[in-house]
Image 1: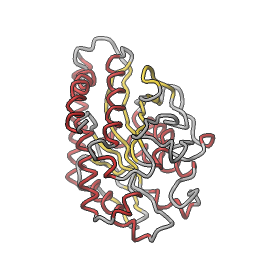
Image 2: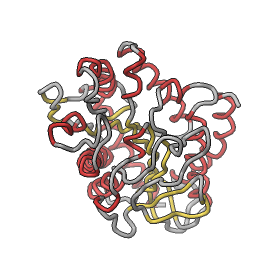
Image 3: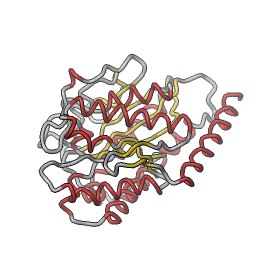
Image 4: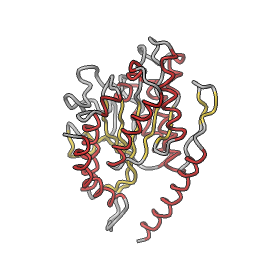
Length: 323
């Protein structure tokens, strides 16, 4: 199925969900939730140790299992997305076992900032390149179907009301071998987000990649630069974590590229905190960047625009609540 046709088929359901998210025609009180799609390659799938991941308190986070059981929400626990494999698509079964991820740490930290429960959807595949996500029969199709199934479920469920729809993206190590420049990678990531945006995704929370210790550090430069600058200047991306580059010196890698569970917890907590701050305040976070050894500051115009958007949303939310 062509990507454009796929997007067209999903639009009706997404528009219906948008009406629910906006509170149109809602008389009974529903539990507000934020839907977050976790997408990328193996470090978003998670090769950690679930027993060392933080527990998610009841009512703080849920998993929607789009592949194995799309009929209900599950309490979020690790290993997140353990069996959410669709053959030939977002399928890790030929490569790895999902044994523990950053999702629980992210959701706990996000909830601490927003007070809003998260419905998390897994959509990742180890070793995936941007070209794998963007081709006509690529991983975007599967990820979009998973997100759509979640939105339809929540739309039809009288207990929940969708407040926001976001995605978390952690990917890039596999694109080092492509030998492109940072503009190529940034353009492809923007194209991918544009497709998700049509399906209702408002922002991409980007976790910047770490180091591959089997490679020359300079080989990572163009991915790191592309991701950093896309978040700094682009209105669709929010940089939420830069700590992955410190994991080798912290002893939080289990091989050349994959994090230990302690690494997942560290990165997930930072990312969830910064994402939650952005959602609560509308201000894109600044942070010390250990790779560039300087303060990361988003473009002032983008930050101001985000803050204004948050103020407008608060006013709109108040008007809906008064009806």
